[in-house]
Image (cartoon, one colour):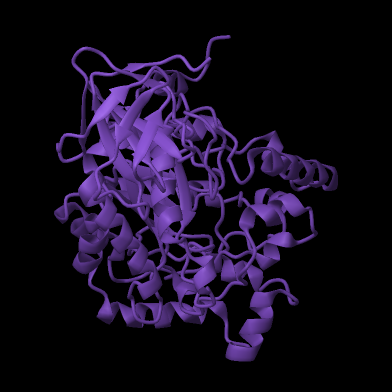
Length: 484
């Protein structure tokens, strides 16, 4: 059936710009007034909450940036904490604390730290669900006049990121804005019911156009849904591509439709919550529904099990939150081996990792536990750059060597990179066979001894290889071996 919307027809013919799948690693930044109280309960996973079916499960979300919403549930951990620490202080007053901390903010320092990880792009939160804008927006919010930072934080971050050699993207909470709808969100159905209508669609459209005009972002990252109908959304996306021809949009642009409207009925709410629970269990986490147009998918705190045909990006925090959570304990942060193998696994399956940093709201600094993980990434990517940057998936993502060591493959031109975890000594790559011109080396070009023993390519790893980090071996001019 032919598409009736001319804008959508043109969008469907667009291919994703090469820079995005080449990038492999991006940095997400959640830094809002909620970063001042910096509280969320720990020890619970967001996907477990969605899968649980517990009433008002999201009132106990581990996402600290949801603090304002959690306060709407009197018995929630955040509400109890707020009363003990802040009494009756309104959430909005945290914005003045956040703005005062800008005196200590050094955007160039942040950008240098992000670039040192090997990241190729940064996606910066410009407005989250509390509606507070991190730029001096000229679009009037009649419900909450002046609810924005007078300092152009988005502009300063944009300049710093680009000066450090990375691309700059913006996150915009199109689906939620508490200044237009402060409906308490305790479930996925509540999430859909909280998407504002009335004057909000025009407001959101105008703000996104303002962000495009001011900052020309290489990434336009929307969240939750979009408040207007598709016929008004596609012209906005088309306008973005006209202004930023090599820009990309994510997959969280579900336009207002009968499904979203049904969340405002009791029957619809039951169906949505039951469906969300089933999908979260099937996917193992949060995978947003695909809208009619997008450039790439964004599973949250979960990865795909196989190589994907379409571009995708795993989005997650360094701990269990995006915004800074002062309650996080060491066990809530990604361990070194898990972080590095996660990046390896995602790249081998054709994805990017968008790893979030949540700076503190009280002093505009990156917490040490988060900076340590950025350092780990930088140490590994500097020595393994060729094995992941601008690569593509091979014929298989890889599973394990004959000896049982976890294994992933990436490829570029005539080189296949075998990336091994917890390996040393001799490893047998069962999916690979040699050719008359095969050459096996370390990533930096040092020869490695090998032999084709009929069961695969047996590689003698150099003595310098330890089992503490993923190790890449470059296989030049090899062929795939059938493992059937």
